[in-house]
Amino acid sequence: MQNFLIEGGTVVTMDGERRVIDRGAVHVQNGRIAAVGESGMRADGAERINATGMLVLPGLIDAHAHAGHALVKTLASDDGQGWFDACRHLYTRGSDAEFWRADAALFALERIRAGVTTGVSMLGGGDSISRTDDPRHADAHCGAIGEAGTRAVVAVGCNRPPFPWLYKDWDGSGTDEEISFERQLEVSREIARKWNGAAEGRLSVALTYPVSHEGAALPDGVTPGLVTDHARQVRALSRDLGLRFTQDGHREGSIAYAHREQGILGPDAYLSHCTNLTEADIAALRESGASVVHNPSAIASVRGRCPAPELIDLGVTVALGSDAPAPDRSGDMFRHMQQAMHYHRRHFRDDQILPPGKALEMITIDAAKAIGMEAEIGSLEPGKKADIVLLDLRKPHLVPANMPLHRAIYFANAADIDTTIVDGRILMRGRKVLSLDEDAVLDAADAAIAKALERTGLQHLLEARPGFWGQSRYS
Image (cartoon, rainbow, N blue to C red):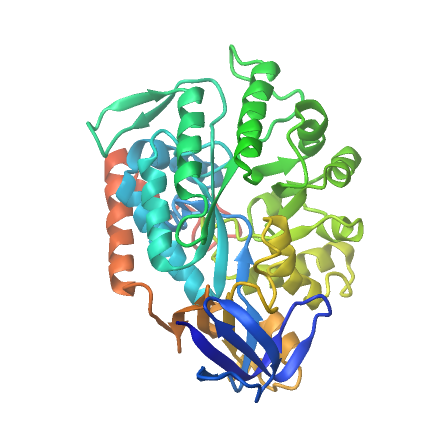
């Protein structure tokens, strides 16, 4: 039976009063927080965990990422379109169940080391490559997450038309298979029924459908009506099953279109990127109650800007996401907090924009609200799940320790996390991961991507492109 008391550290509750308790304590019993207060509180029979010199934080939340991306870091050497095309080919034609298992374990390991206790991952890359041709890929992904011990939301859904989409079945006959929209929808249903609420409640499933743009050019034989019909079918399934709905890549009018023309938004929806929004988009967010996931380190935030501070001021819930650790990012949510602050301060030429406390809310309690879990995670309060991280402040870049919370938000990184706890289970302590064999995870990841590259003939994308050295931009 779990029964331990974390004491002596600075406890950052993120509760309604945003209490920060110097020399605080958190008592954990049976996977939940039993009490939060000052050190010295009574906790009969509890193991004592000394957190002196540490911040005690709610587990961090990454509200948008992609499964598969942990294995394709820097592939195509900064050629964005080349990388995207490679992902599409690898995910549909080069991957097997072991690929998705190895990727999930690797990203879970990175998240444990970074204090990210909850992460959203779309099962595939880009906004329209769902690996929902067969449930075996989701089974492998979810099984690996279950073994790692983290909390996760797996987003599954359907690709854009035209159909059929061509997938390679490496786990069966090794042949090409033509996959219909109906097949993807049924596989998504199977995945949701099997995995939503699995792993003692740590796994959740969300449904997704690609973003549509009014007036966008469509392939021959594809009409806006067909796209809307598919979107509404996926959305209806999410409502029938009581699942959250998420979309990747909203920009420039697409939110208004999704809300007013397709009718697929609502307070149970969270939308990623949301760059260069129109007034109609912002009005649609307010009307629908949908949340936004801002990914400040993503390529989308180079090409456009998410008006996160303005949305916050209008009462829209805004969370932060990593957009996954590829092609040029990481799962380190401290990095993304810091990027968000500098990104918007530079935009407004105003260093008062996005205070550090708000940035921390965006990867804790606000992120929990966006994904519909604020009743269970996102803050340290009695009754909530015991998702807790300890951050070691005894580092040169975090000292002097006279403003510990400010120091951590501005200067900390993933390597400063000492202990990661999910559901009251200690997954890492003293930087030693307890729930996974790290060497085995790393070896499996190397083997999985090597096999996928060989199958697709994409090994050349591991080479540096012309212009890597000695000039101001790529050739």
